[in-house]
Image (cartoon, rainbow, N blue to C red):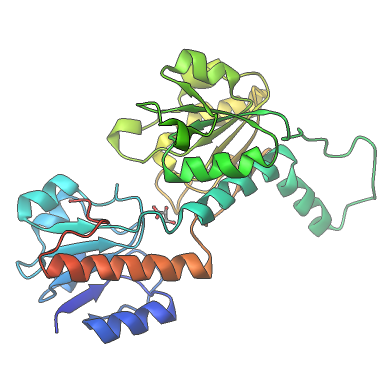
Length: 316
Ligand code: DGY
């Protein structure tokens, strides 16, 4: 049996599956691992998670026994892919199975930010709610508005499907135009200047990494319409926090919904002081059925890669 080192506590069903299929070295901790390379000593494969550091130095220090890294996530910006390739280590992830859950989270952020659900919840819990009032916590209606999706991959397309149910007009910005069967009437933009001014609601759904670092910066925020709503359920690195915070303060951005942060679990403390931002703790894929499906697909990818096969969830 091959040895699998698991960096974090996983759902019970997945730990049981891992223990059936591998000599599994489980970790009963919910926090990002430190000293990963040393802890993986003797393992054939490592199952890691977002937040774990698999930078070039960690991968270079991995024991020679490690042939495969599987990440319990679709995003793999925490794994230095070039370093893994240089070491001959194969990498797999969890595509598709979390698209609906993550899209639901983005829709929840859109609704919560636009309709001021965070402020409302805090008001009720504070005990200071004095009852219904004609001018209380007036938000922005979402139905019938234009939704701009930056990154029209699998998650972006699920958001589009859900947002059509709210009668939203869907626009998207991506590197290439989708075929009509995937586009489903969404309006493609090949440049920011045509895309951003139409985004009454902007949803960030592109991958993290250097190519998209601080994509939502001061200049691009300036091109959004006054009173736009911004949500991010992708990666915190997509946002220049100082620029977004300034726009939330000035009211140019009416509200934001964030599930992910630069340097999470730390986040810019200025967000916490802002009433018009809804903050979630990276819950995008956090449903029982999704996390179980993520576990199954990453374990099957690891097995296939160890067997010399090419699973569809191989990323390197
Ligand atoms: C992913 O899979 O990349 C998510 O961010 C984890 O929920």
